[in-house]
Structures are given as structure tokens and as C-alpha cells.
Amino acid sequence: MGILKINGVVQDEKPSGWAAVTVNTAKDLGILPESLQNNYQQPATRAEFCALAVSLIEKATGTPISASKVFDDDKGDINVQKIAGLGIVTGRGGGVFDPNGGISRQEAAVILEKVARKGLLKELPSGEIAFKDLGGSYAVDAIKKMRGVSPGIMSGKSADTFDPDGKFTREESVSTMLKLWEWFQK
Image 1 (cartoon, rainbow, N blue to C red):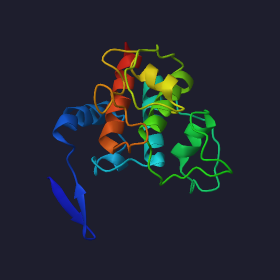
Image 2: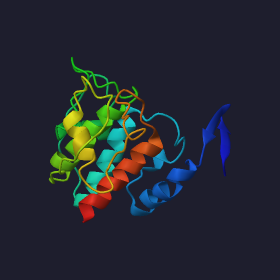
Image 3: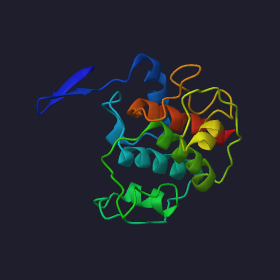
């Protein structure tokens, strides 16, 4: 294990040291889709984040999501369609979802908050934030909710920096979904 090459492209099979236990726990719980069990350190796509969200909701509730909304560019991705059907994601506008686009940290916070509220039917409490880089961010309320449970669903890049436009990696995505799962189970 470690590094693997497929068609000349390096694939990292293992997550970073900080994420190894989290990734293994998510696998063991059945909330980490097999398609996301590699390239942990690369930025997650919007479709990949939806796949994690569907896996979490369906496992936590014990019920398959039957809602569906189709986008012009979703390429038949059932996970995107299910999450959109629940109103958790709305796309980029004009019928476009951008499934292969990267997901920003603030987009992840908004989706995670909606996964709790619309998918798990449980409201996250709001917390305090000291991030100084959120001026103009549309996700301030969702970010506060990421900090409302201890130890928090999502953390900043530092004590006072959230990096709202920064890319969110696959292992960060798994970590936040696992934290949401743990909060839901309490």
C-alpha cells in the first residue's frame, strides 16, 4: 500500500496521518463510499461530496433517499440527484450543477448544515466564531453551526482563519461527515 500508479497517474491509497483513524472509522461504519477510498489528499469534487452526504443520510436514517432533481450536467449521478431532491444542493444556476468542480470550504459548511437539517432532520446549534476572513461570506451562519457542537464539525485553518474559498479535500470531507454522524448519534 502507499503509492499506486494507474495509467501513469499517482494514486495515494492512504490518507494523511491526521486522517487515518477517521477514514478507517468511516469505512467501518459504512459511510465512506468505495469510490472515495483513494486520493484522500486531493480536492473533493461537488459530486463526491454529494456521494458522502447520501451515504451518511441513508446509513443514519436507515432509509434510501427517494427524492430526485436532475441537472443538465449531472451525467445521471444518482447521488447528486438525491441530494438536490432534498434541497440540500441547488447547483450553480441555469440547470447546471458542475459535478466535477471543486468544493470550497464555505460550500461544504452550507451543505453540511443542510445535511443535518434537511437530511437528518436535526438542527445544529449555533456557535461562536473568531474567524477574521469571513467578510462577505454567504456561509457565516452555516460556519457558526459547524462550531456549535463540541468539538465542532468543521474547524478553521487557524484560530482566526477559516479560508472560506479554499478547496476542501476528500479526507476533510470524510472527517466532517464522520463528525456529523457522531453528533447525530448522540
